[in-house]
Length: 115
Length: 110
Image (cartoon, rainbow over all chains, first blue to last red; front, side):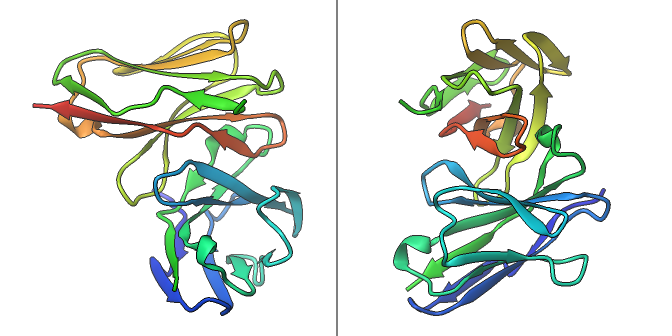
């Protein structure tokens, strides 16, 4: 069964460092998303991406964040200068169709710990 | 007011019980309604989605949407210990992004 894969599963970084979280979406999917979940809190939308550009972003997705699809298969989330409050699980998701964004498949997540 | 409010847990039931999980919402633009299951430290797994008001059944799971009341429910019949997880409701406008509820943690005791 096709799945969304994320690497690494756990990343520890020092405050102020840059991190790149990687995702390989399902191969025929066209829409890509990043969500985050701070421990004990709800899953929050960060950004959606289609046709090599951002479709929508939340207020959380400020200038410290960027996304890229560098090679047609990977989808990355970069945080330029990490803060303690960036510690969370980051989930990548993909779907074939946006209007049916219901059928988004999530990866297992990357747990980011900023120390 | 939160856009999506989910009944807080935790919920603990004996095996075989019927479970009802509920969410209300305030944004009339929501058109797609989903239920995800999330095991500890894992990604959300889509269980069911619905578009219109009414019921949708899939095995032991029934999703119910009442757009007039802005209320959605997930019913689990004959609950099993393997159903123990956190259940998330989520909703979309046409924009594709999902707005999630806080989640309800369910424990089904053998």
